[in-house]
Image 1 (tube, one colour):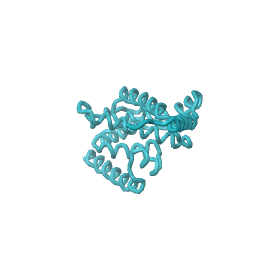
Image 2: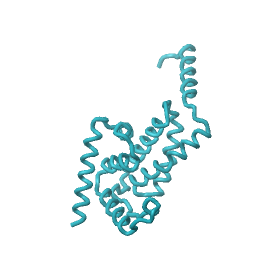
Image 3: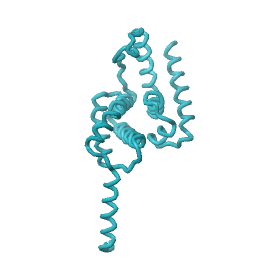
Image 4: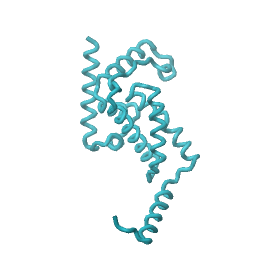
Length: 190
């Protein structure tokens, strides 16, 4: 290993100081960011893992890694995408563990009335149960794509960034995932 000169150490220290300066998120800014993103990230984690308690733990770990990484991101959309990328990686890490059954997703009823207008709760419950069962039969990547696109409303570019795929392939991947979900739901009706 070669010796490091004083000039190189000064450059390294300047680089570290610059990196810390680019992450301008104080406690109040982080609190606001957390309030806007915690619920959607938790919902994503709960759906992908099928376990609300595990989603709680992964949510905490995602924010910890986010803060520890100190990303130099331009705006909130980039920070949000980066946070979803961390959450996706955490879910993938959990799936790699042999003791976790990745297809196990508990079926839950609706948490509240439809649009707050007291719609047909029985029909909505059946629809949600069928959808949850159908999603449980999909591959993890297909569930992730559908959740990000339709539950989170992410753009194709944001989905590509979050899942680490090419933006040009997201449209086709979503098409295939929708088609597979539709086939699963049709088969369940029979």
